[in-house]
Image (cartoon, rainbow, N blue to C red; front, side):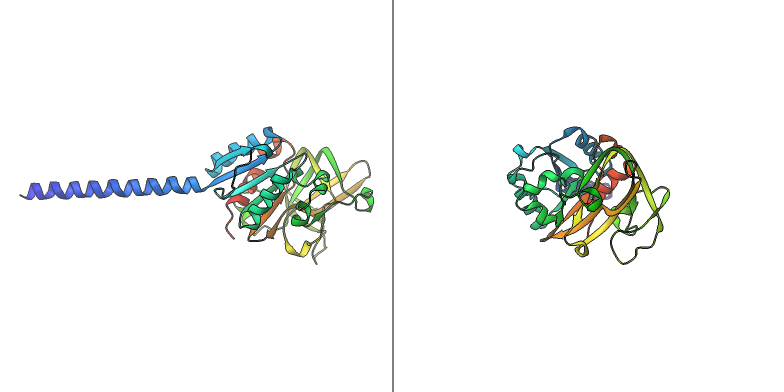
Length: 270
């Protein structure tokens, strides 16, 4: 009788343990399925590097599409990344902004802010960005390719800039925004053989959370540029738009710290 009773108890324990395991597995699968990211792009090579990192380091499921292959809804995605170099089609423009407005996290990379987007109806207004068509020395927009610059940490306490991110040598930096304009030594990450954008103008600087600046020496003019424009967060509707200037070449995303900050921007909880 005791053996029979014990056997029944063991059977019950095994059944309960199996049920619990299946429940945990089901919950894990559901959690993984919920952590999906959509990349909307028109240059694939860089995004393949980023995709690999997001999958391996972030355990995220990643879908990559072009502007002609947008899903009917973005609601299944935990975050959406925009990497559009050339024309931003209005269908994609509206879908991306609606996603953020309705509570999504839209991460715009590198040339997602460029001169060609000025013709779009809603995009720059939503980002509160303008690019002046004046000479560089008068604050006009310009880019420099094949150069090196230092990405500078302006918000070391923020999850995006701190979680699993290793900053390097401190560089002398003077803020372009905010009340504190004294030169300070701030941690940096050096980016080589890439592209920098100069004179992105904010129309709402007080409403953005400034994460990173950049320090760039223009050899042609002998001038240093230090601008708080390399990474920022803007609340938009019920969601957020996050911008990162790094990302011109695949090597930018091969830099673990840059890729990690993009991952952090996706999974960051307010």
